[in-house]
Image (cartoon, rainbow, N blue to C red; front, side):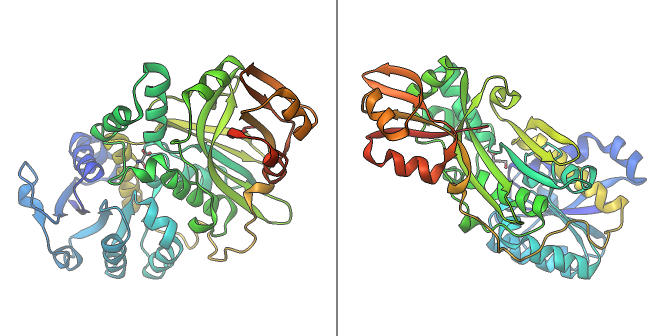
Length: 397
Ligand code: HSE
């Protein structure tokens, strides 16, 4: 019998207990022994079938030699950070979906795990149930990764889909996302691009092997997206989606940001709806490869966590599972990244032409809506300084 502990018993913690039970036979077949949740750390005891397993004393887990894997689903940094360090120091493998903790302390925790010769795995921290971190660091590890981008927040994508396709209000769509267990405890992290920002930091850390600091990454969420822009973009053959993007630039420099983009409908990324996420990785050998699936929710996220638990039990930690250097130098301002831009201005076409030289007009109906040629964001903003800009969005190229 292999016994594990779960820290925190919210959406993901409950999902882990359910998947462990539901797929018990299959898991046992794979790891050779039954897998059982022995202890659950909670702040407030909850009634139900797991009541007998609950404790509010972490030392009962830390000192229990029968517990070999600790699943941290508390979220946030404070308690999660302390307990993760204590569990690793006690020689237990730790598995988590906690992107904030990985983003802020991933390097340090990986080093600690390495010293203790245990695993610290976090597949579920990006893309919910989608396998992305293992493919990135193993299956396509032979590539030089040039770019990673994707729809990384299930809640925002769900809200956008409900607003655009079903005419739901922002508030109602957010409430539904919360009821479905997609949103963070504080959903501003979802709608303001912070959750996607943490995920693109993790992807960039692993793709480029160097720390990307959350505070260096500009993050814009979905609050500013207007349905008017969605309709104009759609008529021109584009969808508007929130993307996190990390790019390798010249001379080992790199950048990352989160912002809404226009994506041409020819791209599969344009058709990713509801809670689904998609992540595109561009490698110098494989070319473009896309990963798609449910990016949030109890069971999909638990699927990734349980797979990591099984990996802890089936493999010994290698010396350098991931290449992640704490050095954060070489991070550039994403305003230097060149693309086309979508503008909606209170002004005429001649105003637009005066500022940009030439443009592709999408609409002239009181306001002027146009696409620029490829230009850096810095230059686009400089040229638009004289204009009365209602919307400025990047076009994914
Ligand atoms: N709140 C996150 C999302 C959960 O909506 O994508 C998965 O990380």
